[in-house]
Image 1 (cartoon, helix red, strand yellow):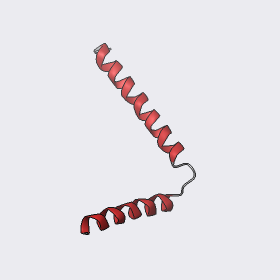
Image 2 (spheres, one colour):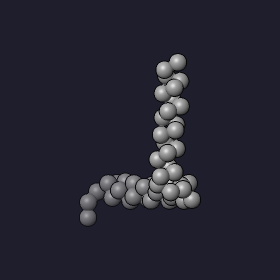
Image 3 (cartoon, rainbow, N blue to C red):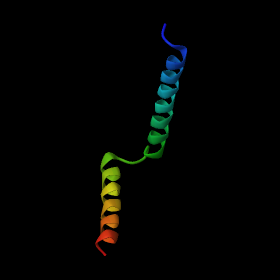
Length: 53
C-alpha cells in the first residue's frame, strides 16, 4: 500500500471524526432542529446587544 504514516493518520482522522459526531449527537439528542436554531439566534442576539452598548 502507501506510506504507513499516511495510512495511520487517515485512520486516526476518521476515528476522531466519528467520536466528534457521537459526542455532538449525544449533546443535542433531545433537541429538535428548530430548538437548536432558536438557541443559536438567541445567543447571537445577546452578543450583538453587548456589542451595540
